[in-house]
Length: 89
Image 1 (cartoon, rainbow, N blue to C red):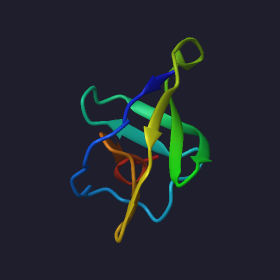
Image 2: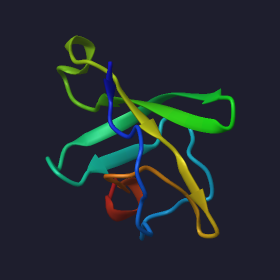
Image 3: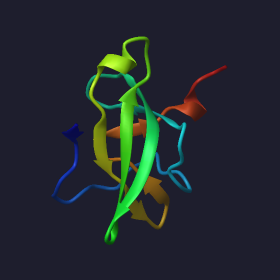
């Protein structure tokens, strides 16, 4: 498991959603790859999302743990952009 956000201050994120939910697709801002939210859980006062690469090799890749950031605009994942609204199906 990789921990993508452990500490630090986060700037305002333009792609906040009302809430992070299972099955949402988020695009990594660094590598441009899509990740699927596979699990959400709480640790004391912090919520985390577990992400897995959304491609054919997903079963053999590690999961990534990302701290959910909540603000007035909604919830977001630092370093990721909500991808589903920008994609045509």
